[in-house]
Image (cartoon, rainbow, N blue to C red; front, side):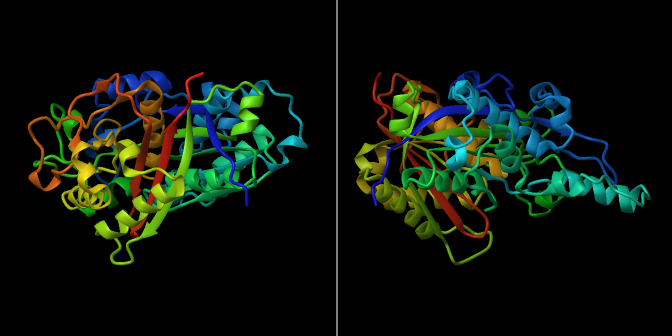
Length: 419
């Protein structure tokens, strides 16, 4: 089978910064945190925890009120980010030829899907005493809502599917979309992930696991501290991120801008524990991505780490990187951008993949915020990025996602040739 090169021609997102892709990366490079204290009056008890929200996002303005009215928030975030990526790729300017688009795909990732729709339904039934729910409840709550709407709105007649693999959902979706284009099953694929985690039940469930970082109004912005000696847990966030993957020759023929090239995808399972990560399993996914890409460890200049700031998870990831990169590890730049945009669960891999692509495109590496002077000795052995670095000649980079259930997924990217 002939393997095709796969270009990334479109990037889009709805981020907590609310300023678009380029401004998002500028915020990351400057080490600016979007984490704030979330205080709600939800019953039976209020929430009071650090959180990341896309508070400035207006779904009606972004999508039009009729379309937005058919979706709940995870789909709003996903479809809006995908529309941005589609426009960035310049595909809306192509003639809408249904025959050409018969093999154009949409592959999406989400961990929670329409959980807000279902939570609202449960409240209406059991708390508010209603006997009937909205007839849209099922279609708003289904996990494949984003790819269904995108396929309809963009006229995509090819593969339409969603992946739910906990915190690796959108990384898996991007990896599977990459394989479809590389293997000739699709000429174009729009892919990424979205999640809306601001549900009372979701927040309380994570809180019950004792994995959520505490914080007050003054310190919430630095609640997420991956790799630090005083890290205390993750910070939940919401958002959506998307990219357009395209057959390289197709992209070049139409004069598309190529942000970067996606060259490899690796996955594995720890096969040992539901929530306790395991370095050997993560290392297998890293090696699989490198083998798939044909890249050597000396060619990788940056890794966007999964780095959630959990006490157990961060040292395991560094151990896996040391296992794979060996003597190269101390010179391997590593950062965890979750320290600034929070953990978007199923959307985390997508927003971090975009950050990795932008690092390659701009020759700049965002930091792990709040890490200076706090590095845990158990996380030593790689080149942690304490402050944003610019003017870095990056050739290739990896983006890691390691999920509950022991599911590991890694994406490999290469910088696009200079135009």
